Image 1: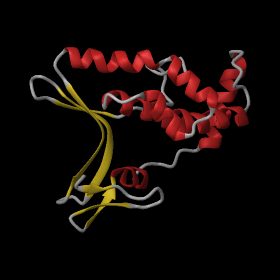
Image 2: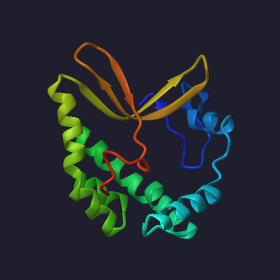
Image 3: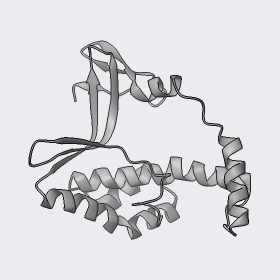
Image 4: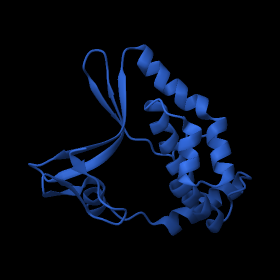
Length: 170
């Protein structure tokens, strides 16, 4: 890799000795802060009216933490392994996930495999966890998946595990 990723708590990628700002830090700086507690309360109220088990602010906050920290890490790890034609079970084992998280992801691994296979059958090549940067703008980041179609079109995929859809069954 030419671009060096920052440490877990680092603010910069580096490329040829040049510090590159994390794109996520730039977005965070110019976005309004997410008022997690306020929105968790609103979601809990909605859930209570609809008999959803996540009917308190604390339950919603715990779910969000789980989705962000455990499930998100696991889905990204499994996806990366599948794209690289590696064993997703081993990738999940290496992440030290909670047993129920690992089981849920493995039970739904067919969704991830299908997503990859559909693109590959159309002639696309997919690359996982790619670091990209721009020295002129001093920005860098890591892309979950880059798809290069058979026509040369480049598609950047950024998976949000808190969203419903492909991963809603987890």
